[in-house]
Image (cartoon, rainbow, N blue to C red; front, side):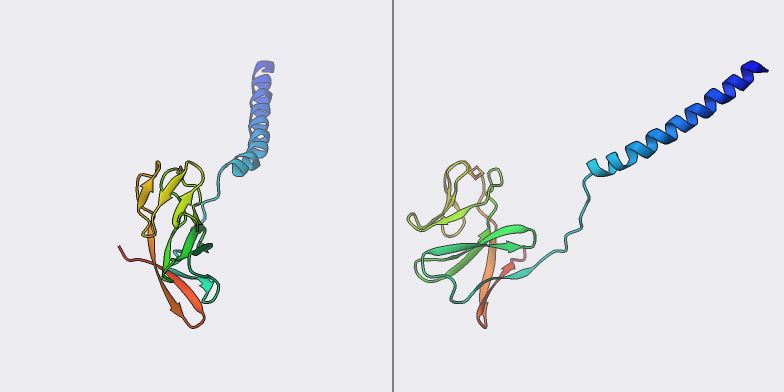
Length: 144
Ligand code: FES
């Protein structure tokens, strides 16, 4: 009888121990597990005011949660691309001196059509459509 009481108490202690560990580990596991945010697909954004860029300049803008780059070419034409380098994902920038899009991470160069000129990027930048509406420049994802 004493042995069965001991087994019962050991079993009870084991259950309490597991419950205590679960209570401690649950918040730790929740903290370590990344929250999956469902990003709503943004199809167009205002990238700049109409008078914000001058020829041969560019600016970064947010396209949803990702960076985009809007360029006014030396001829005064707007072009827009994803600003995420196709090599390892650094954010690209516009180089007025070279009249190219440049990735500083590994010296990747893209032309004003987003095509790779030199460096390690394997693919062109994703191109966006852009248009002026009122006093704003809109950038829109192109339908594939
Ligand atoms: S991440 Fe852009 S060149 Fe490597």
